[in-house]
Image 1: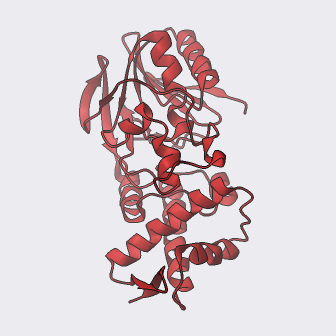
Image 2: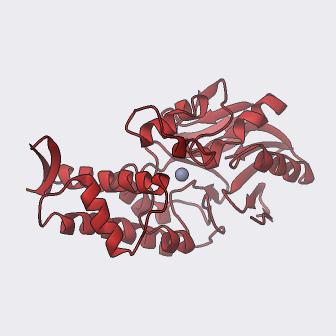
Length: 298
Ligand SMILES: [Zn+2]
């Protein structure tokens, strides 16, 4: 994918294309926010940073998905800088097997989950947990903003008027291509999306797609999609169903055909997040019977 370097003019930069990479530069020292998928994206990011006349001081990862941290192992080895991530996301970077393991219900993952989009090829031996709030990361000032939902403990990294928000919002193109967007905690994500436009940042750089000056419309579109998935999940429960059959009904609504187990399993996580949300609200519950775990309306 063609990449593009953005200079936002206040010590913040981004390399967009694929999974976006952000930079916060202060007195010639830089935090890299996410690293892209692999050593190729990490090399590109390092070159872009050198072009901007800065030295890498720290790597901050927004969340433990391989397309965002896959390049961190190579960078940490090459530059010896420290890698930081929110506490619950850090283990995924130290142990990349956790991502396919979780997607496969904790069992040894199938071959289809071992591609580089779900299993990063290189791990980082130590990741420092990143607390929320204003702080210095590798001597560079930044703010860590909790943005949970898409991943359990995702955080954005901000400086000045720029927020690198990870996958807190997806661009319209992604919403169209993957209608059942990956979600770990639907209620937490809705909370994040409600709060996002009110944060004091003029520019938001999502993990995919273009930087946005006005995040409200995108936050609303993402929230509307999550609400729709939740409503469709409820709709599917006119008859009691297993989570697999609910996914089938929701996929049919969006005219989605899963061509590979990975896409099926990613979407299944989202349906399970919707079911947990319905259970929390007392709208749906589980009934065991016939050795099946069946969801029904309450
Ligand atoms: Zn992600």
